[in-house]
Image (cartoon, rainbow, N blue to C red; front, side, top):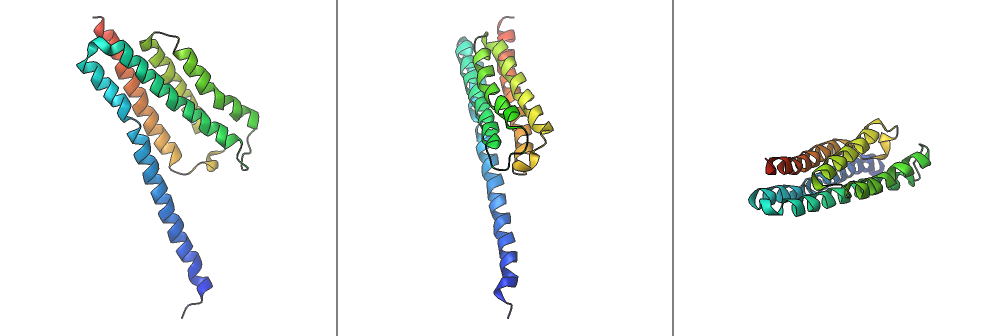
Length: 167
């Protein structure tokens, strides 16, 4: 018979691995399901081009909300006990998405989309070059890259409809 203390670490590793897998799958499902509104808005604009301006505003508001949420992640990382990078730098970065979105929404819809895409990708660049990558779960950066790419392409596709609409 094996003493309990020899089997406990093995069971703990399996439990932790299962929890990480569940966390990864949940994050991916929630993340990619968050792209459904942008897809719906794009297809809505194709079917009802007369509502393109309103649908573009809706897409920009939605993408701006996601962008602000990503800023919130930076805020959360800056106040975690493990934070080691100068907190002021991350706190400044954390509020930028909300301010950037407010500025973007002052522009015409097509240009606002480009402005939000630039902001999303600038924040992604910050995250990719961040020295504190270990603070985030291993699934975060790959998911962030994929979602930023898809959201950016969705916004740019909606923006492109404006140019096609005027031709």
